[in-house]
Structures are given as structure tokens and as C-alpha cells.
Amino acid sequence: MKKLFQKKVQILHHIKVGPGYFRMGLAFPELAMVARPGQFVMVRLPDGYIPLLRRPFSVHSRLVEGAEVCGFEVLYKVVGQGTQAMSGLKAGDLLDVLGPLGNGFSCPDGIRHVFLVAGGVGVACLCCLALFLKEHKGVRSTVFLGGRSATDVLCQEEFDSIGAKVRITTEDGSLGEKGVITSMVEQAINVNGRPDMIYACGPTGMLKAISDIACTHEVLCQISLETVMACGFGVCLGCAVQKAGSPGAYLHACTDGPVFDSRAVVI
Ligand SMILES: Cc1cc2nc3c(=O)[nH]c(=O)nc-3n(C[C@H](O)[C@H](O)[C@H](O)COP(=O)(O)OP(=O)(O)OC[C@H]3O[C@@H](n4cnc5c(N)ncnc54)[C@H](O)[C@@H]3O)c2cc1C
Image (cartoon, rainbow, N blue to C red):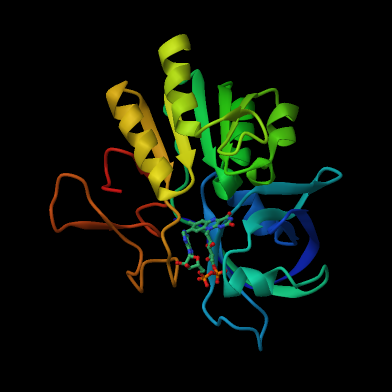
């Protein structure tokens, strides 16, 4: 039985890390202790704020003070009304948080080297995965970070600090190689060989391209879908994703995902 928590929690810190990008620390140790990489929380803004519906965010990292887990962080991008309102909150304000939700990433036995592929803020769910894979599974990660521009490339230092190899592309060439991250992934496979697994999160087009690359090169691939959802726990059924190989059949990103085997869904 999965543990699920809901309460109003204090914002520990709220830091702007780039134009439109924020890190928010939330004082929720019980949730942080049990959340697995790839799981998410649903966040509701304080009373009086619009929108009323919760918004989903990945658990980005576990916060530790001394030897104690004191909460977790979300890393988010301002894209609309909810995230715009959220960006105005301050340390000490309260947010209603529900989670951890969803299934998270899995790491079968025998995996030694993986590719983590992030498009922009899709990196939010991959940092704690890299740490988990290194600390608990002895797995080596090569990380591919893609963005439109240098300011969309996040978390490079976090991956560096755990010894992961980081490769970067930007579409305008302002950081790393000029181009798209999926081309770099394919080139890396052609030159250096296949990883044992690809884990990816980012825009739908990027996930589709990565799934195709994984299929062509016969690499296992898990993708985390950021499908718009209203409830996060299987009641509203708003986050339907078409099931591969079964026309008319659907899975739901909140309860069956957000992490899927790339062969299981049509994206
Ligand atoms: C499981 C899950 C985990 C997520 N984790 C993170 C995270 O860690 N960090 C982060 O920044 N975002 C994350 N997201 C996306 C985040 O939930 C949305 O960006 C947020 O809900 C937008 O709310 P809003 O009110 O600001 O925008 P809205 O006003 O709801 O939407 C503004 C615009 O953005 C579009 N939009 C909204 N949500 C999405 C989406 N998921 N994908 C593409 N377009 C979208 C809308 O269609 C609209 O055009 C996650 C989503 C899911 C499903």
C-alpha cells in the first residue's frame, strides 16, 4: 500500500534560478522520505489565489538538514496562471501539497550505464534519479541536457557534483553544441554504443524522438509524461494517454504513469 500525504506545508526557500525558473523548498519530511524518483506532488495555491485546481510538479530533490530529511524541492518553470501566481509566494507562506503520486522510474537488475535525457525543465525529475541510481544501484549516468538557449539548461552543477558526465545542446548555440538534444543522443549511441536504459522527460516532440531512437537501437526506454491533469489520482481521467497496440484503449498519466515504458504508449 502506497503512503499518501496531504497537508499545508511551509515554503522553506523560494529561489529564482533563471528567467522564469524557480526552486521551491517545502517542509514535508514524511513525503520526502518515501517519494521515489519520478513521482510527483499536486500543489494547491493558498486560499484566495487563482487557479483553484492543483498543479502537478515532480519531486526534484530531497532536502537534508544535518542528518535529518527536512523536506523536498520542486524545480519549476512559469508557463501560465498557476505557476505565475506561485512564483510570487515567499518563504514562510503555506502551500497545500498532496503526494507522492504516480509510479516513478524503475531500474531493473543488471543495468550498469544509463542515459538521462532532459528537455528544459523536464530535468526536474531526473536529478534525484541520477543520485538514486548512483547511490543505490551503482549505475553510471550520462546526462543529456537540451534547451532552446543557455538559460533553459538547468542543474548542470548537480549532475557534475555526483560525477555524471554531462552533455549539452542549445538550439541557438549559446551553450554546449548547437542543435537538438535528440541528435546528440543518437550520435552518442552510434559512436560509443548503446546504454542499458534511457530515461527521458521533456516536451512531447522530444519524447517521441527519443522513443523512436530507443526503438531503432533496441534500447529500453522510460519516459515521464507531463500530461495536463486536474486531480492527480485517477478520478478526473483528464490525463488519458493512448495505449500502444490497442486502438481505443487508454492509460492515465497520473495512476499508470507519469513514467511509461516508451513502447507502452502512443505519444
Ligand atoms: C507528472 C507531472 C510532473 C510535472 N513536473 C513539473 C516540474 O517538476 N516542473 C515544472 O515546471 N512543470 C512540471 N509539470 C508541468 C506543470 O504541471 C505545468 O507547467 C503547470 O501545471 C502549468 O500550470 P499553470 O497554471 O502555470 O499553466 P496553465 O495556465 O494551466 O497553462 C498555461 C499554458 O501551458 C500549457 N501547459 C500546461 N501544462 C502543461 C504541460 N504539462 N505540458 C505542456 N504544456 C502545458 C497549457 O496548455 C497552456 O498553454 C509537470 C506535469 C506533470 C503532469
